Image 1: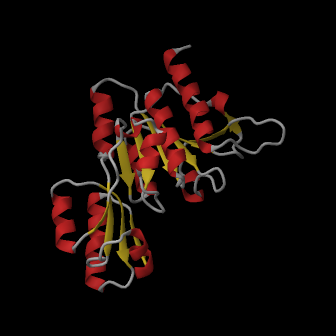
Image 2: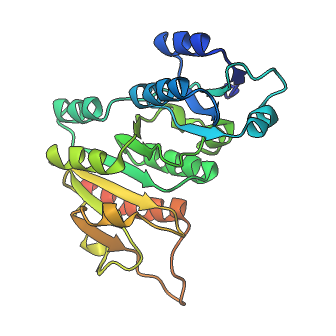
Image 3: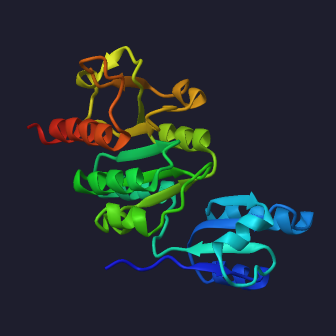
Length: 249
């Protein structure tokens, strides 16, 4: 049902050619002791093409593949495609739709991401924004957990989550962060305006720097001394409240 993710050991020139031809990579592992100029080149490619990059010891590279590690690169291909944030925003406004984005900050478990993607697609989210820093590879597990809907969502990768947040604000999109210590509850959320809901890992939460620039922080009122839900469960609750307001249920 799902396309397999392939681990590839690539010579640098082949890797570069595949990028130019539009091949997407869910994650790229590079040898931490590769020549400095090559390291700068691949880092620049990561910024320009939006793939997660991590530098690792040679032992890690060898553990990822049975093939010879060529030029110190192991790349994971993906069938998913990624979009420009501005293009997705423009499309919403052109279609007279009220933008609804979901941003994940620090969520690295691929099964949580898959479950969130399924909920997001089912509740009409226009774009899912993923932070490239400490990003999980969007592999078969993520696609399968999403029941394949991860392939239908507009996916946006962010190299700098704070700049992405500012870009959203410049486009008139209200930033709302889920935080278990927020003063306001989910019932004080205005869901029928241009909106980006920001979720963090249930342990670390949304980053402090990001919390400082959001327009609103909200929480789900918990009972029985439970501090928080699993992030994918919380996502469904927040999004359903937004959709309830938009559909005036």
